[in-house]
Image (tube, rainbow, N blue to C red):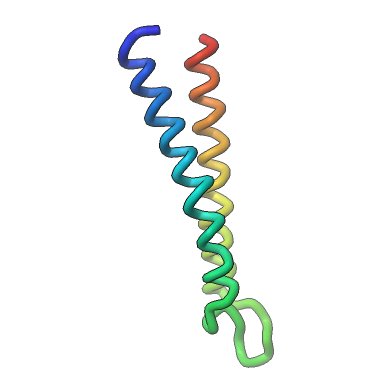
Length: 74
């Protein structure tokens, strides 16, 4: 494997690791934030937007892992 591929694999794995470690830990703070519920107790757009951000970050992590695996195998 040539040097650029090794660097690409390292960057993909580092990005995936960051997303998997950081974003899920953010969820409890969002859920506990007073802006996450309205006066009736229903979830707000603030909560939904942040949950979508977390989900997208985890999907990107999965795609990054897949891309790294393809580089390693290919």
